[in-house]
Image (cartoon, rainbow, N blue to C red; front, side, top):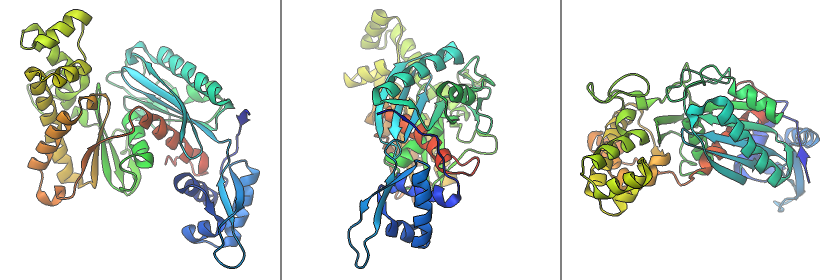
Length: 402
């Protein structure tokens, strides 16, 4: 069956109902009334309208609680969202149902430096492929994450350091036009944080930091369950915190940024220098074989006990830990989740980050602070992007994103 739904919530109460069904699963009308603290009459009327809009469906009688049996309510089966998560060297695209369960995905290589037309063209081709796979002509909405600063209200990239040609490009409108549905654009780390909040290890945490360590480094900030973007949308850009006045030049043009020391490109750069200097036989062999080294090569070297790889990971983790210790003292989060491509380096990197963060922070702030790796993998960005747009489609209030 092919679905083409275009309805959206018409009132705040309908938005609350849809969000509750999205996050908690099917509920009876009585349970909805209890959890939203409204009358059953109100719930019945709003559910009826949502059924007419094609957003909800009644799903038979609920278990008896004594007296007249209530009716179960669920999201409409045909709701489909698209999630597009674009990184510097790869992207994930996928389709979810209304509860944001991933139905189909594609994981594709890309080079963000090729510009928006090429990269978005590849993303949209992947989206059309997964839409065809699940039998959908037009989704209800699409969320997009890109690895750079974003003007959320305008749906454009803004002076992104590693994205030449993207400044001012109307990413949101281009995707919306091509897919024929509403779209929202955000920074990739914000999208990942939203995904972690919905389906990951931070699901039950109200205040947490999601730190992405990939080609670049960024931090998604969730406060009291809500994503915090900052006044100009660049909150959490921790990769450009200066950690050494005389460090290497960063993609942003400054020197000594965290990203210039600990991002994936920096790890690859230092590994290449070590290979050429003869400090690592394994890395030198990989360089001769492939012509270039990546952070993944350092991970392979680490698995073989390569001492130079161990030192590279310890240095990278130490720098990240120093910055996180400062953030812990300032923000006092309930959890820190580490994600992104460089986390393929695994527990060696995590152990160093933990050790430095715990060692440099006040015991009161870290006594019950978990610092953990994300378990969502590449699907985290798809889930987060779908969650981003679902908040807009489900809610009639402009600007609501999750």
